[in-house]
Each structure stands twice: as C-alpha cells, then as structure tokens.
Amino acid sequence: MKILFVGDLSSYARARQRFKVMQDLGFLVKGISWVPLETDLEINHKPKLWHRVRNKLGYPVDLVNLNENLLPELIDFPADLLWIEKATTVLPSVYKKIKLKFPRLKIVFYSEDDIYIRNNRSNYLKTSLPIFDIVFTTKTRNLSELPKWEVKKTLLVFQAYDQNFHKPISLNDEEKKYWGSDVSFIGTFENDRYEKMLFLAQKGIKIRVWGSNWQYCQNRHPNLLVEARPVYNDNFIKVINSTRINLNFLRKHNRDQHTSRSLEIPACQGFMLAERTEEHLYLFEEGKEAEFFNSHNELLKKVEYYLAHEEERQLIAENARIRCLNSGYDHHSRIKFMLEQIFS
Image (cartoon, rainbow, N blue to C red; front, top):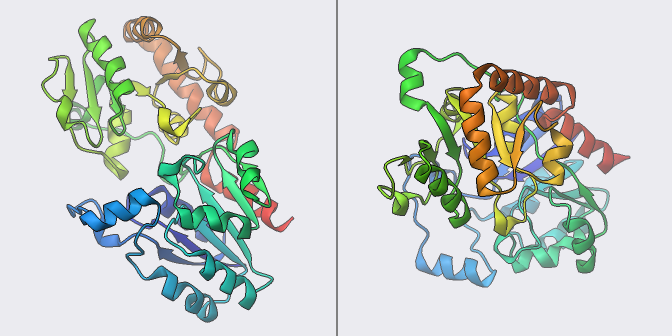
C-alpha cells in the first residue's frame, strides 16, 4: 500500500513518529510537512503579525505551498491513502479536486487535539471535514459533536507511545543531577497547572518544570524551579527516567481526559501521578500501574506518600511499563487498528 502522509514532520513532532511507524509496518510512505521545517527547535521562529491575525480569524496562511503542490504530489505518487494529520491550511477546493481526480483514494484526517474547539481548527478544516472518509479523534466528546458538521464517520482512538523510542534508559550520576528531580512536570504553561504546582511548592515540595511559556513564573517560589524551556526527544526521556514522580496535568481548554504523556511516561517506566479521569482509569489500574488525584490535597498527600515509599513507587512504574507493552498502547498497534478501519 502507498500512503501520502501530510503532517508536522519536525524532528520533535509526534506526527513524525507515526510517519516512521507506517514505514516500519512495510508501507511505501511519502511525507509532506504542512509546517515549515525551518521552524524546528534550533530556530527562533516568530510568526508575522498578519499570519497571527489570519490564524485568529480561522484562515491560516499556507507557508509551504501545500495547496499548490498536493494534487501534483498525488499525480507523481498515486497513493491508496491520503493521511492528513492536523493540517489546517488545506483548502476544501483542493480536497474536492483530489476526489474528482482519484475517486477511489481514501482521505482520512487525524488530530491529537480537540478539533471541535476553535483554536484547534480553521474554517478551511471545518468545511473540509465532510469530504474525509474517516475522521479519527482522541476526544470522546467529538464522537457526538462532529456528526453535526456532516462528518461521514468518526472513530475514537486513544493516544500512544513510540515503542522504538519511549523506553527506560540508564543515566549516570552526572546526567541524573542535570535532568533529575524528586517531582517534575513537562508541558506548556496553563494557569491551572501553575496553581497546582505552586500549592505543592508552598507545602514544601520541590518541583522542576520543563516546557514553553513558563518564563513569567520564574522566581515565584524557591521550591518551584522553572526551566522555561521544552525538552524533546532524548532529553524528554532523560527527564522522565531521572524523576521520581512525573506529574501529568491535562489541558483544560482541550477537554483532555488523557494525553500523549499518559502513555509516554509509563512506557518509559516513569512513575506517573495524573489527574483522575475515566480514560486514565481505563488505561491504568490506580495504585498498581499509576496514581491519580482529584484535589490539591489529594495531590499533596500522594506526592508525600510516594516520596517516602521508594520500592512501592518503583513497582508501580514497572507495572505501568508492562501494561503498555501488553495492552497495545504503542503507535504500531494504534496505526494498524486505524488502517484496518479505513480499508475494512
């Protein structure tokens, strides 16, 4: 099978992981990045004001000429499947031309984000949704919401980890000191996350925070060490494996019940303490494979308990890794499932 994969192919993007997994599975896959690759980690890319305005209005700028090149790419590479991952810049007219030219071509859309929320979609994408053969979502609520937009078929898939990448590693003492901490969090700033960690800091818990947009929270409390920089790839795994308790906070505006971290942390054999949701409880057994909390006080109680019970904490982390391996929580298993649904 031939697949034309359109997604963010930056070195740190999970879309790139899925792209490589499709190649691992033996398919002939060609990739197109819908975002400029020069916006990768090492480049300080700041969108122009007009681009930001267009994004806000729901009409994002196509920075890689994808609308011009997508049909010619398919002519040169006649695929069986056009996989669109989150791309918000493609015009509906382009999809319609592709459908006319290749009526048997399957076009599917996948996004980790809640595309029913305006910030995660564009007007182009919303208008294009009825054209897709299947829309895969990681958000349970989308199953009842997306049909309102005349989506043909909506399927729920949980997020996943990369079995080639997310695994426990050994670090030397110097690496553990550089990356490690008793408690850490990896993720973008949100006020709810900040308030929870500030509460812990005020109760005497030292926390290390990695991620974007945290610079305004630096030096707010001596127990809250804000690195104000993201960690990706190998550094991401080093932080997890040198942290005793890995916090996992959900994104409220994304209406998350689980995130990619919900699988990546346990797959790395990290101890995860996350917000209690139905989906988290479905993925991992509480107290055996992960720990969960509802309130600030419960969060504090469990942090204090597991900092004082090292063997129990390590056993839970080991069980979580085993659960990931035995339950098919990896990209390979997820993508196999999705391809079966597409061509069943």
